[in-house]
Image (cartoon, rainbow, N blue to C red):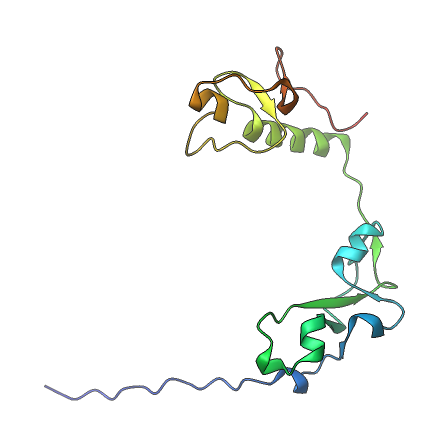
Amino acid sequence: MPRTRRKRPRKVARVPRGDATLPEFDRGAVPEGLVTRRVLRDMGLSPGDNVGPVAILRCRRCATRPQWSCRHPTRGFLLRVDLARPKRVPTLAQELALDRAMSAGSTCSRCSRRYDYCLPLRTVGCCGPCAQGYEPTPGTYVTTTVPVTHRLAA
């Protein structure tokens, strides 16, 4: 029986965070014009022409401890505000399609109640009250006697 040579696993060169090409900033030292995705969203903007992150935002723990001792290496990517664009506004047809898709996952197949959250239709097949046999409180669902209509746009 011929002997086969074992291939050695390739070693991946890991670059320590301090030698990374992106600059890191603490929360209080972020330069003007750099924000996270969440802040962009709150400003009504999308990343737009931002190809990738410009810098990294470190959490408080990572700023005070060495990187190897931080158990929660929470970091956020910072993007440039001047490259961001306004969010796109969906058309009425797109909103109607989204509303229909959301209603399909939040409407019970037994009682036809539409809830404010997605139901476990694949596993249970109906809403919790129908599965457990009790009447839900009226504030948790929207009653519909007709097929679900468009509710998002005015």
